[in-house]
Image 1 (cartoon, rainbow, N blue to C red):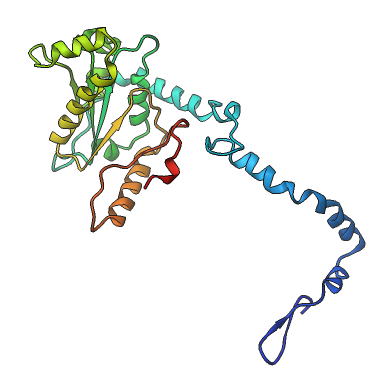
Image 2 (cartoon, one colour):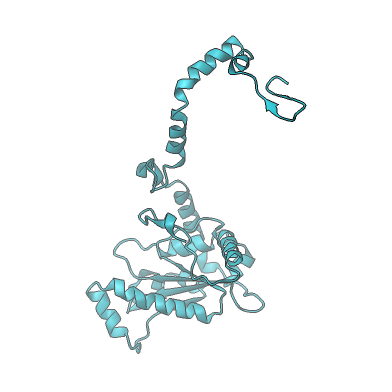
Length: 260
């Protein structure tokens, strides 16, 4: 064997570097000598390429990281889905009538563009009939006067959600909610929105509740990935309890690597 031999004692012996070097042709030796100075830079080149989207990395490059390549294509798919949403029937529910996941989205009117329609469409576009039946889509229009939200009169709001929640005029907290909208008290008002949404999702009997922001874009195939992740959590915590599974991290949420 050219690179090693085995003695009767069972120990492996390797030849001296000089004898290894002699196995290479003159051309190969020149090539190796030429490449040796560049070897230290190879790891740097790798991480420069592999870590440019990692906000915790020294090699993070926001100009490249925020290029909308897949996002642009997914937005187009969501827009196409919304165009035909008015003709889509509600899915046939599972035999027991209980969804696997209740997806809750709280939305209020934004000053500029409204993204919630794209969020809903990206969640639903591409799902199989069985996957769609396993989801209960719950939307809360958080404005005290729901008609102020542009989606209130859009066609898809009548066909895609399983339920659309609004604040009733006899709601005991309605005045506080109105005041919150007028004086910019949105941070505390969010507590009311998500409490209402969580309670209503809980009432569906769904095994899991997913709370999604109204400006989120879901990738194709998100549901099987989430269910697989949840299955992993269930297996790891078979004898314990857990509260939530974070679906993704935003670039300004640092310290996530220490979160358990």
